[in-house]
Length: 321
Length: 312
Image (cartoon, rainbow over all chains, first blue to last red):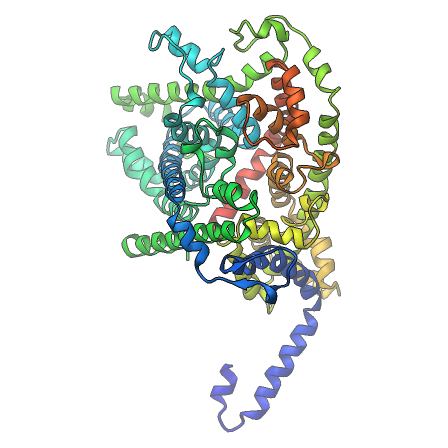
């Protein structure tokens, strides 16, 4: 490009040359193309084609009928959605659990990483860290099974403990009462992911220069002050990037936990958008309606992501885009 | 990692002694107690499950098992191996883990290599094309319809194909390749190697740490996933997976009548005869393979997580 603009009299020839060399590069890089194009097509089929499927939300979609024969209904499904009282309950559940997960999932790993960093006994530090990863690697099926077992009324450790401490005298039916559900999901999430999410913070902490701590010690700063004035500011960029990313995934927190921990007794509190799409869209064959729910979910997520990114860019000059 | 404060070994002891104020002592006590608390909180449920799985099932009903079986027995484990769904599930789970991991590693590393080549024309486009998928997804139902249109429902392929290229994994490997000296590739090029040979002979062997990380992510993901079985192959008993079988067995008793899928019939029958101990034994069987692997790969995935986070 540069050669063209700088060489005004002789426009034709260099243009020809760049064109030629582009072809030449293409030919030279043919192996790179062979190695990447199949996967690009792959991504197109499995990640982008479902986006094309969003058109279903504006049709009265019938399976097995060609795209052009589908009947278009405009925003009808969205209107149905926004008029459904059930939808607002589901939205409330989704937002509540997402927000609780966001706040807890943002604070607890940072605190855990800060504390683990203060452990001077290397053997213990490594042991605790290895143990803390463990729940991340088990499936939600297993995790939900374990949580249910721990909270059960017959022999669950939580109830036994509370009874033996005389805090309660009747076991609490944790899994059968709706108002416990959000807390249980959040708690299960913390139990499962804290150690894993702390990895990045611990890595960031280890990148802080030791001379800062030295200087602070010379000045007589206590360990707590060092944590507050050196370690925490040192990992601030990491915290902000991860926070923005998790805000972007706010509504995409998934439904595995809710699916596996929920039951019909607590469904008023456990049903989230994806489960709503599953139960009232897919399971009933209402593909178009279900897709409208999915679209709503995705669009809100994107808006949140851009909003969070914009806000942080403005106030802290950190951004992910 | 974390040896930050150990810079001056000489005289450190004395300075430490001097600076140990009461406040620091309290902090230290709080930190150590919390860490012990975290360890107990994490370990106890697993040990409890293990103990129950090794305890006589009739005796378990009395309750009060903590981390040690009261009446030791292996009967529970004998019993679960008579359930054919679990045998099939185990086979399919192993198969999808092995194939899915291998396929994901090859495709991910190949794509990552081309994106790490700064001279590659299409590099920017493909990177952006891939990055979009990290934030936007079609969602459950369009995905389901696509699988249906591609005739992937009730096939084994539905476990492997959709997740073959993961943007996150590609970026993890690419950041690693970015860190390798470029001179290696150049000298191979001078020797007349083509780009594929460079990838296969030069880059791949050097990428082992990144590959180990990604292999762990892929394998854990494959081994642990159950929802694709539920959604696509729930009615096909020959394509069931271990996690799905466990899910059916655990779900069918937590409440009596959730999602009365017809596929749950077998599980319900199993659950009626399977006491707590048996359920816990299955949980252990499903969990153990992963618990054996992950501590050995720890140093790799810690690095991989950091790489991925920095780049993405």
